[in-house]
Length: 204
Image (cartoon, helix red, strand yellow):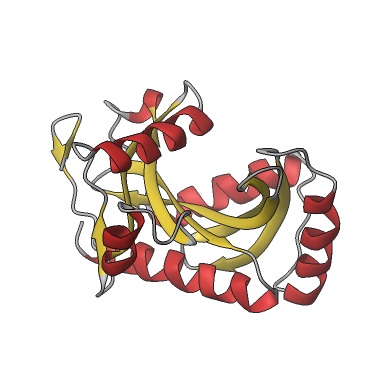
């Protein structure tokens, strides 16, 4: 894809496919992600398991239990950054430290306990940033608790992990979301995030 005149490749793991914005169901989902991202960010693409997408388009499953997307700050569309990934990671880490973000230092059990406590108190469609769940060569990985509205008056928990990486001179934000079951869900979501980050970084 071309962003601000610069070509960028987003590489998906085997078995995953991009949502098609021209498909009505896919377009609605991308629109919902864009609305949640707010005015300052642009959702570039979204992805999920190919077979799950096919079934979801016809109602089975009714919701998407695992998906991801890539977005960019509107202010970064034209910008090309001269610094490297290490400098970006350090800048983000410092900004989070200045904000007093919780750092779980890879303590998944503590994060899971906080997640389960926090999401129970969220209103439908509510969200809350939890803090840094992990650090890798791309920098900090942030975790968010989501309360997703289900059928009728039901709701269920979803965990979202996100991280910024440098690709083709652009700072992009990668997001991996999964319906939450237990602490293993967090590991699974990080696996999704890491695979996309590594594959995309290696191709740009």
